[in-house]
Length: 202
Image (tube, rainbow, N blue to C red):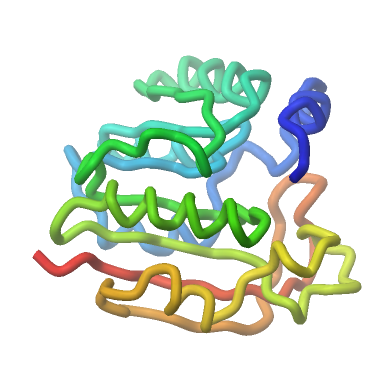
């Protein structure tokens, strides 16, 4: 597993590794969100997605295992004048709050298979009835591209993995294919992703 120390080092500079603007796919789902919803941005690093959720009037939390990243997230929230809770934790071992969130944003969170299964089980427990899970991750077709993503193929996602890990959720959208990324210096260019919008039955 990649070390949190490595991510601390990655986030230590003044620039934002993935930019300050929220993920395009997440922003495109804004029509599904309502002020007051409890939202969690998983693996949110420097906070771009959690801050955007807070700007939409949601009660937002960002969780990541990099304290350095989350310090930048808190500073970004303060600069944007929104409230953002931050939790430093390994999401594979975090005590996810049961039914604690109405929206979970799982944006480019890539974990080894065992950790992925644990984190997904936690997310399932944490999603409240009627809650939405919004996911965008790289697929195996991304291998060899320079637009970002893990080098270890075991960390990549697929439609089948989404269906397996989040079985029991209603599928509102589940697509894979090519998108253009423009997210800071680390996500630039054409990329191969899976995107999902899933809902827990009420």
